[in-house]
Length: 175
Image (cartoon, rainbow, N blue to C red):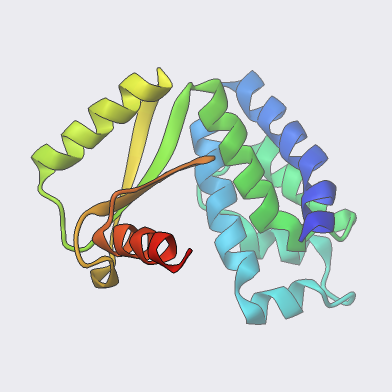
């Protein structure tokens, strides 16, 4: 995985530079996400690794309708260099750069039950205040948390779940 990230990083930087220059970072983000999802499918992955597959055919599998010419050329470059398997990593790194440039933090809120909109708005406002950036929230439900929520915002994880509190209490009592 580390080697894949190392190989993907220059491609992601180049893709972001091209997208930003054209003012189409959001469109590139969507197109890369689509291509990455397709490339990650096991059957497609094995097909993309086949040396008999022409680069143009490989690109045709991965292009979203309405993709701009620069994006198609970018995929062609990846195909020529046998780097299409790196698309998931390239898409993730591209998305990190896009969010950083737009000063947006992506956070995932996992709760024991579906949270009402007012609570999500309060969490979003608190995170916006803490990070000084806009916040994109993703939600998930995990009944094993028993109660409360876990907020994962990049390098910051806030565990306010009942399960987490019980685990911390158990650890403290075991010492």
